[in-house]
Length: 243
Image (tube, rainbow, N blue to C red; front, top):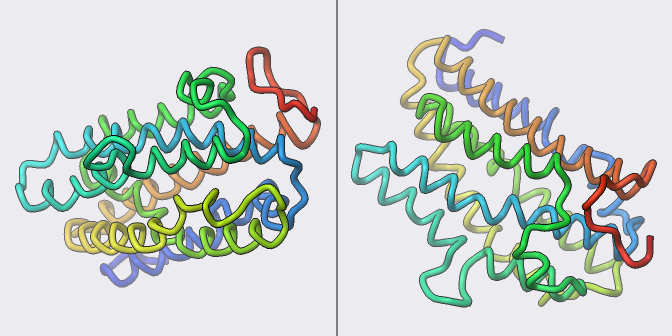
């Protein structure tokens, strides 16, 4: 597909999401279909915490590179969404609440002990990508949020229907993301469409999104290998009580 216009760019980006987003991953399918046990869901929540905790660090790194005040002001809302404006607020606190409701010890989760090496490597690679790559690519890497509302809706409705150890309070984190993710995605998409002014720049935007989809996929690969099949968590990784 030729990337000779901003419309062609958006079409390519949406095709990448349709083909490569992690809602296609077998681990997600197992979780959606109620086929994971509580320990496997705990492992997912524990490892996802590391990702959640690094999002405001990633966004702060990106903001430090923005010279335009208005863009920086808009982007700062992402940090506020995750950190909150006061103690006990924000997405990270809600993710910790999810972990606690699943039976994980809060101090253990915050210690970041027990997460899979691939989780750490992948998330750290994302933060470094945003710090080091051209600003256009750094912003483009956030465009997985274009596809987030669908997976959030599917995940929450399915988990509520199929797992007796979760309820709406457990999954409260996702309620806010249903409005935050589309807002953020719309801004980032508009930014890359306006600033990717050549076919080469549009191609770099697509490659940034591919990097991010691969990163998310790799995290679920690691969870599947460690906790589903062949169930071989590496030394030092979290081991569920029901394993």
